[in-house]
Length: 128
Image (cartoon, rainbow, N blue to C red; front, side):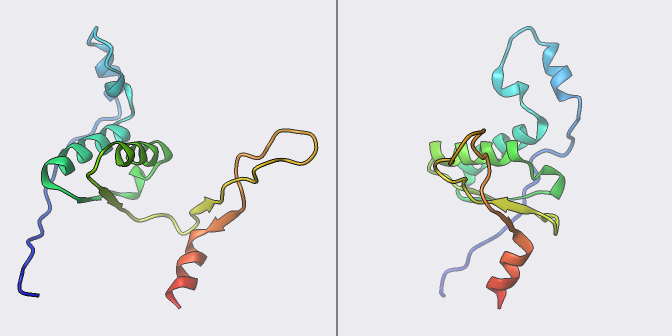
């Protein structure tokens, strides 16, 4: 325990606008990364900072916890060596789903989701 680590919080961007897609359309050049939602752009910007500082925690309001943001974070983790973890508050009613069964028996469309798992009960059972 002789080494001491220094922790700090660095605000990356302060002002986020909901109309960012409309503003990016003003530019005639099509940049696919700039056409993403501002939440996904924030994940990209946070990960770019993580490349500079090393493994990082990104603190987010629950508004920013979305499927597109988590998908982008997963893509970035697979393509890079740097890791960035999200710290946020999820709703008590948050639900995760297991992978669906490999094959569907009978007719009809295969399931997209597997069994539902309520995260609140998952954490409370592991806390015991």
